[in-house]
Length: 387
Image (cartoon, rainbow, N blue to C red):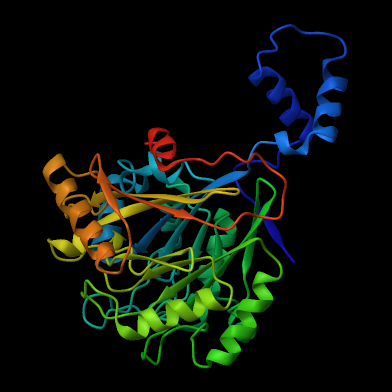
């Protein structure tokens, strides 16, 4: 099992114990402080701090067509300059990459929607701090076999991981997860396409029994499993019955978080069996027409051991003048947040709007690890929002 390490290093137990001493008011240094710290760590496991990690997830990133023109005119740093403070802040940042990165293969972005962005546009992903992208979508194969090969080579060159795709000669393994290690957690990422398009992707859902086997295999190797799905109906605000059925099946068979995209518009968040389902995160970098297609959100998910999920969605808007997301003015941010909160409420989710963000708190069963018995409250979490 190949594991990448997230941006937060694995905690050394002695360092934890020293921090505990500091936190309890120990201000004086002594020669035996390190030994005492180690003794505390060994004899009082209930005092260990709760592990946590953060994930930032966004929807579709397309780097061809007018986005590529904007990159040529203003530089790759211009695309995410207004929002990278948040995307860079998480331990793991995830997006759906909606185009091959290649100088070869078919290319007809306007007439036939065959996307293909120059490989150097991968610098946008790096600039935004993205650690992993899904390649299970209906555009990954636009540039053919060579386009897939070049995309994988480019992402590896720039240090961006991927899921939902493998080399064309190994496409039967496209479902295989990518793993990260963050704060003693192993996080698995998988990606699938659930569309009728013939050119869907290598990781296309066709057999639910086989899907269950793959999920079980992945979950056995990680603590928490993130499953990305390209699905649903374009320009629809509500998930289809097929989306909801599949989402519940994924959770029932091991998924801890479902990350959805393809409709190009925000859809609501559902909580099913203690697991968040983000049906559609909307566009993040795209050049579609003005309106709700260019309004979406950055989803920030914090997981805390023996508590669960604290999630906020921060609205963004994509002005066609720059082809990259910005934080909208207060009135527009409130409108986007209110729409997302209402769509989530329609799915039975308790979502609250605060400071033009949508907040969702999800309690999870306790883990098999001794820890403090006190629990984080939603208020405590919200008061510590990173941005």
